[in-house]
Structures are given as structure tokens and as C-alpha cells.
Amino acid sequence: METTFTEVPEIKLNPEDARVVTGILKDAQERMRTAASALGGLGDVVHTAYTGAGTGQAVENYGALGKSGRVLGDILEQLETDFTLVITSGEEMDLDAQGVVNGVNINTISPDSGIVAGI
Image (cartoon, rainbow, N blue to C red; front, top):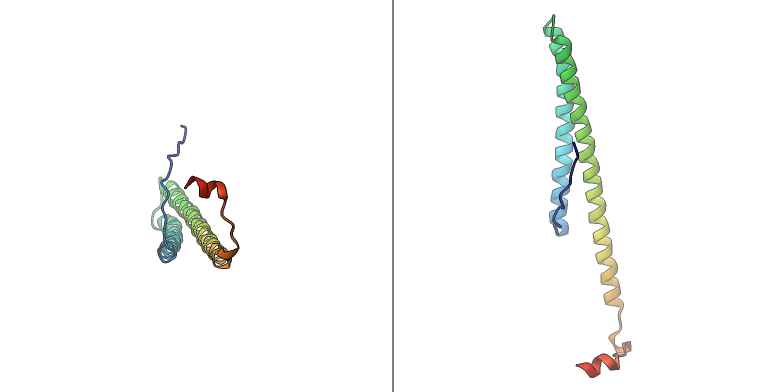
């Protein structure tokens, strides 16, 4: 089966909203890790509570769920880290641009006579 990706629309956030999204990602990552640990531990509970056919499969299933949850937690953590880097880069570019704009002396700018003549 081939996996296809659709183009994701660009979403622009101000720094305050971006920090809110970062907090949501961090919370989701922590919750996923907690759930993964709980699910992984249920396999041992099932094994202790039941004996006979199917117990091994239940232990395996709960263990796999726990591992999947931990992987998803890792993915969410990386997403939160990447998002924080994007926010930081954007803020630094804004500061750099502001510094350039504030440092321009308009008295030293010579207008292009070709452009001026065309106006």
C-alpha cells in the first residue's frame, strides 16, 4: 500500500499563539507517555490474572500498545522541539529585520532616476 501525503496549508501564528500550541504538544506528549506506560503494564496484570490459552496474546497485545504509545510520545516530543525551533527562528528573523529597518538612514538613499521618471 502506497502512502500519499497531501499538502498542508500554511498557518501563521503570532508568538503568543505559537507558545500555546507548543504547550499543547508538550502536554500531549506527556499524556501519551503516561498512557503508554500504563498500557504496557497491563500485559503483566493480564498474565497474572488469567492462565491458559490467549494469555500470551493478551500480554503481547498490551506490550505492543505500550510500545506504540511510547513511539507516538517520542514523535510528539520531536514535533514540539521542531515547533519551538521554528518559533525561535522566526523571532530571531523578526529581530534582525527590525534592526536592519531601524538602522537605515533614508537621507543616504539615492532614488533610481529611471524609476522616478516612470512615476
